[in-house]
Image 1 (cartoon, one colour):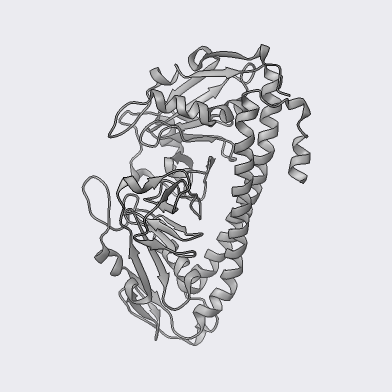
Image 2 (spheres, rainbow, N blue to C red):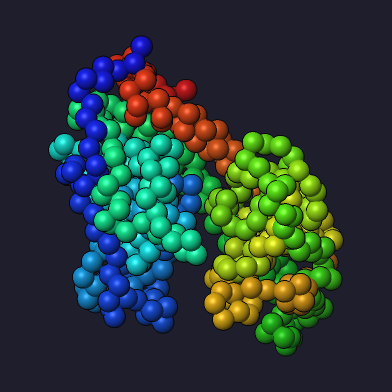
Length: 418
């Protein structure tokens, strides 16, 4: 039986006690040259991963710079929404930072916390029905956007405050489990990357004391080690997009990935499928984006068709994890290579000629013996998170529509312990 809907009220977003704050578009907008090592986070849409804020690659601005920015200051439990390009992507700001600044392609949605619960509102805004309404109000074909004047017209149906809190607590139980797994993944990833950095960047690998350093195009490297083009140590498949008539969202064919739209933190999620098999990536292949942003990396979890925005890379020496860690280190900052006046892109030639470090002896195998088990656990935890998201997302529309009586739902603690 569903919840009693007699107390649910539908009003345009602008008629609820919800404040909307856009980003600062004045001359104070931070430039890349103003980013600092630590300070106040300056958020971009690239920090939005799977409805959460990915804090592993944040940009920062100084406190002085942040103080000069008039608008777009985010505080705990504020909802951040992208408003241009890929509109309607959402995160709830509860990552531990007391303050952050949004860029001009975002806005802040702030619930009053007395009539509208912020966590309930976050879940309502990311529901399929409200997302469809947001996209309905968007305008602009080349660069879709939703101005505040249109966003405030989106209808929201909201129950009484206690029901909101109950629904929010049930959904938050899933989000907490996902967050716990995500933190474990981040720790594991840092472990693997620190070993890579220690051995292959600082060259403090086992036995390094007996090895002489020599000059190379990549700087000083151990004697006997080589610098080789990526094409010599790996096979590279450049994506090519089939005609759109072969795409579908019904699961017919095999997954199709055109670019980074469906990237996760490490592994992509499948949304589009393709009925013709042209350029293929196989399970375990490194998916490297070749169109803006250049250099973003995910790992294929199954056979898939890749479009013109991606390339698939596989080690010829069966050292895929070493290759992954080297590419992640080399492209820790995006758009380092490629041409294009409007957006960056790289050619097949560019990819083939990327200079890569090639150690000798059994050092790669020794590294992989440490790193492969770590990445296996990362894969398992990522799959658990996908399952939790699917369960949560099936539950979400039934909860926020009142189709489920929340008084009959188990406590969040029971969900977490299951």
